[in-house]
Length: 363
Image (cartoon, rainbow, N blue to C red; front, side):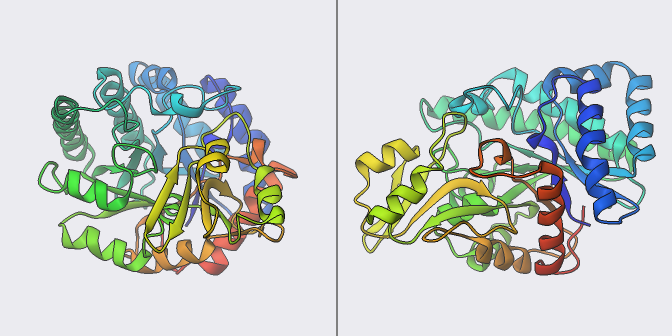
């Protein structure tokens, strides 16, 4: 089964989460004519804390999910708070892995997930941010983040002993962050963490923006003794000719104020970087192809002259181990030019994923 990530739904509390699931997830399941639908669940930090503190509420939440034909084997614990403010941008990277609140939130998510896992799940996964945005960051911050992950590992081991199935953290590299690329994440994690409990979240939009080769990237993770714990199935926006009037005009429609849209230009001398689309227009030479951190729907090819990087997604999923968790994560529907009905769009993405991604992936 392939999950879809619920961070696309604004919901500040448990009642709001259930309302959104009724409005969208149940409709998606029915549209797919499926008995069950896998979710990559996002819980705001106060909701996760409340479920941990109230065991009866957590049991009731599990029952509510089951009554709707919904299952959960993975959580997206990257956004800590409201992911749908008018302006999110750099706020999504807070609290960082140097802040005790990040550890507390992730421990809470692990405890919740352990109770929600379906009987069919071999493990649970939790994706998280790549430590922090790259600035400011010091050697002392490295040490503090490593200490936090060591403490988290103790909690993950305890959940594994308690429930008999591992809960694993998946660190998600993202352009512009301390762990910008998968290579950065592998270099930082290897030798610092217990690979039985902490590995990589391979977001294929982020991977595409870095212009890294998918198969070689997955092989490098294995060679370092780490696992791809989770794949976030996503596609980046590609601009083959950003220097043309048509290319510039087309990509300008995706410049919006809520989310950060990092841009990379693949030149013969190396990959050039801009932290957001407005900056890219001003600083990049636009002489070679751009890839933009804007999650575009998997099934919907952008209008020419733009395209998307679903080829990177397909190659990445083909390279990971069978049974790796796969979660469709297109959180940008609310800012997508010309977006249609959200439930219909999610169902169409999941149909595309079922048709194009290697069988054997699971959530």
